[in-house]
Length: 366
Image (tube, rainbow, N blue to C red):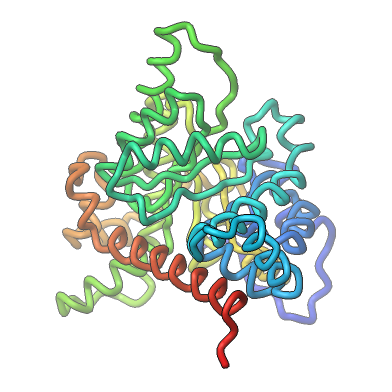
């Protein structure tokens, strides 16, 4: 295991680990939040991208109700027939536009490869490819450095290809496995190839394919418990890391024009074990603080394989093999994969909670 913990009272040498990694490696840092205060500080750590989704938007609105409460009231007056959901998504759009401004310098400096603000398509559209594409095109026009999240489901793959063809930069989400990542990268390639075949303008899309490594860990822990399978403590903490390393290696070998993105942190290895590669790591802001506070060492580890004994133990689990092998699942199987179902449900529930926040502002309980 890379890195070592330092006591809370240890004086850290400059630069901090996140900044050191940003200066040394092609691996780039994105902030898993569009909260303006967190994003500004993360940029100081070296962040060159950020993300927004219903869960993140809900947290940002709750943290800044003094700002968003009055603004939701104003939006309700501007759009008197808008539903609670429509008003909530207007907040998501405005939050995203404001956050995107923070990232314009990185966008310009990288020619569009970085400096992206991710906006997620409405999870309630997850069964409708045409609706996902239409919303992706709309979101893409909110700011010049927007990148749009579309899920790695059987429907989402069709939307990813079509949205890419229409010029949308893609951040693949609801993605936990190597087969999902490879299928999504192939969909992006097909969209880019269609553009080239028709002579459409070429530019740096900066598209990324997320693997939510911590959510893969979570699902395998739940699955092994349900199956009454006992594994050595700590083994399952490496599942997401193994999948991310394997996906990065596969992307490199196949020459995909998109990059792997590590998200859904559950341990520092989702950052420290991936340094050195041409990929993105997107920890929540609190994880960034903890990495810096504990002085986790930034080393080139992307090509350091997971301990063979650990990988062998993981490969004994059929559910991990499905997640690790490139052809471990079909797109139809992506839809019923446990982590997919759990995450879509969480995003849908966050949508509902955002609706309730809007409702409480417009119709305060009495």
